[in-house]
Amino acid sequence: MEVFYYLVFGFLSLIVALLELSKTAKDRVATSSAFNSFKNNYLVVYSLMMAGDWLQGPYVYFLYSQYGFDKGDIGRLFIAGFGSSMLFGTIVGSLADKQGRRRACVTYCITYILSCITKHSPQYKVLMLGRILGGIATSLLFSAFESWLVAEHNKRGFEPQWLSLTFSKAIFLGNGLIAIISGLFANLLADNMGFGPVAPFDAAACFLAIGMAIILSTWGENYGDPSENKDLLTQFKGAAAAIAADEKIALLGAIQSLFEGSMYTFVFLWTPALSPNDEDIPHGFIFATFMLSSMLGSSIASRLMARPALKVEGYMQIVFAVSAVTLLLPVIINFLVAPSVKGGGISFGGCILLFGFCTFEACVGIFWPSMMKMRSQYIPEEARSTIMNFFRIPLNIFVCVVLYNVNAFPISVMFGMCSIFLFMASILQRRLMVVAESHKSKPQDWTALRTQDEETEALNI
Image (cartoon, rainbow, N blue to C red; front, side, top):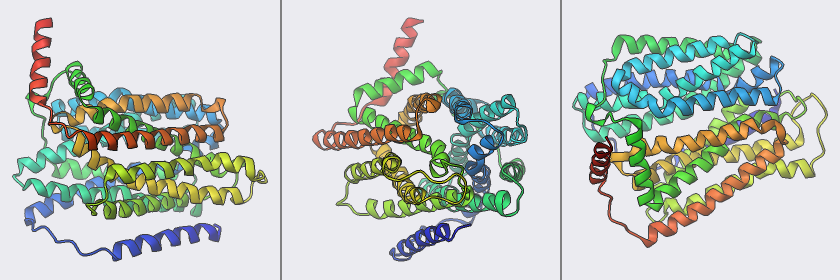
């Protein structure tokens, strides 16, 4: 592997280390030994679940291309995954509440293991089935585990503020350290040890099986509150009413869809962008570098949010603008840099793109905690999960439409479109800041709103 990749990774590691070491020590929250045992058990399981997910990321596109499928075929496979997540994501939360969260977590493990097994087949229909299973598993990963944790935390009588400790540790481990280690381990298995691109999926299945064994042996079952189990139509009516009543919620949802839609499109496009002429690139190592960049962004975000004078609505305009410029780089490179020779190592244009993509991933790292903070400010707690699921529908539709047409346009055009969307997100973020500062509106009476919806539903019946 070229020295260039080690230099980029080492440079980013140094910056992250300096940022973390230069932070002032934060006061530790006193907790009980019972809570620490509970928290550590969850973190082990969650880390194993995320390892099972992250191990697959670097080699999905590459594996499909090795089986001889072109960009259009691969795009349809990705569409199947996002479409499956869209269809099941809106109902999986209520299913987990009714059938049991622990059972839903075990279902995630089984479904994702089956998805990994399908990667051994070069048959398109089998791979399509694997993507559908993967979409279902993704929906469970981002709903069932959190639901189980919150319910179990409250059932055991732990202090409510301790829940944030578990969440922060889970994000740091699952979306940071585990992602980096998974990328490096996937690269070790597939490239350095020569086991091929299927090996990371086998490793993922093993980690998922270990996590499932821990769940079955140590986790208890819990269910949702029956009073909260309304049908989907009633839930979406309430979400639509909330969005119509508050422009800030609508703007936030649009911003989230535009950014995450561009981000998921980037996940599909970065491999062909860095190796347009079949250059030999270390996919796992680059993936780990991206995750390190995301950790850098998270570290920057924690500093920004710690300063009362800096408003999230303000600096996120700059973040969206910077991310738009980074995804415009492939368009610029396409016009200014001569095409590389087929095969060989990464080209000069590829090196520039790698720096740009690392910057974009740093913006992603800033985006997640900042968006969480804005959601906590503007989305009412009573309607939070319903509204968040509501906005995942246009997000997944957007990604499916982009991927369905990916073969009809050059990669530079697709990146240009994502850049436009990110500039739009920056403009909408500006509007959100203006609206937030101009109206300090009273909190919505969401209980009354739900009661009104239920009365209307009863009259219709």
